[in-house]
Length: 75
Length: 212
Image (tube, rainbow over all chains, first blue to last red; front, side, top):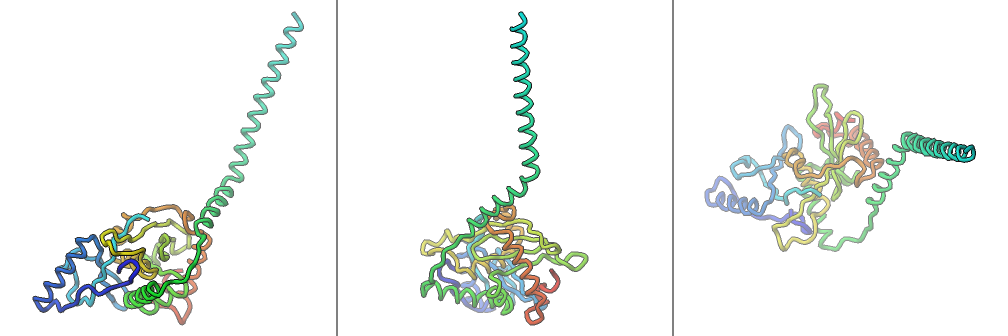
């Protein structure tokens, strides 16, 4: 998510392929280094959920995407 | 000196009368505060809430419109089509806490775009707090403005679902009525209940059907 723009694709790859996994890890770290929060949407028994992750290793292996958004601040 | 004594007596009487008058005025003021204080407070809060809800609209630019459309598409892909339908119809998303022993969630949140999140008692509908939170992208110099409305709502939704305590730790928590008209929020709780019980729109999988 980017202010004024909506969502943008940052990186795409197959985590089972070592080279692509490394690209995904690098992209993930760049976003977290910028202070972004990372959420993984999930569907649990038909119920829509989201998990916040702080490390690439926490991303479920069957996840289809990770959504980065600016961190929350008191408004 | 009888005349001097009489004058002194009259002065004392005048002092006592003045003291009595002041005491009566204080008692009357205290009674008025007790009787009308809560109403006065509500009126002041209502005026403040109404004043803060004054808004001016403008047509979105093509770029903003495209961003909103992308944001709504992303929202649908995360919360489902029924969630997007609710957002479009009611103007907010919601989250309920996990069900308690009686199967009913203890509380819920109304999530508005670029306005505070409102927490409410899911059983009584009583408003609990306003959670003021925003998502400024301080790390991106190219970032212009704020998140599209649907993205702002989705970010709040994901943060509550994903790590409610982390969001609460960042939010400024105020009593109801600070920024959102409490009458409007109470109406929205009722609208949410009606939306949830509408046969065509109910989504038990989202916990809507369990709360009133």
